[in-house]
Image (cartoon, rainbow, N blue to C red; front, side, top):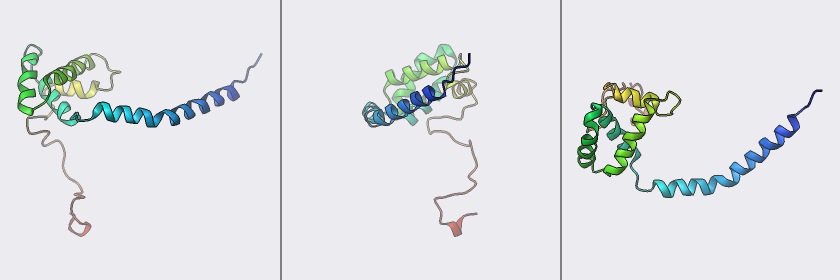
Length: 131
């Protein structure tokens, strides 16, 4: 006996789209409130610096890097812990970045990433000055 679920699946998909549309403003507001004042880029760069250290040196490195970059040490430690967990799970969204940082090849430093790319087109310049 053949059962056609296409109509049911379409209805469920439509319900999910409606739920997402209705929830989007409140989710966005909650994320914005939770992220207020968080310097994600600085935390990622600082985490990369911590991850370049040997595992036994990372706990001490967290305090030093956080102080040097004026970051919350507890937040940096949490990010470093997440990065360590990510290195063990290829399905983790941070896996590639965390393993790259742990390898020591990540160019993060106290001044930020340097030398990781070449500028092909500089959009800060007017079109006639671009080369």
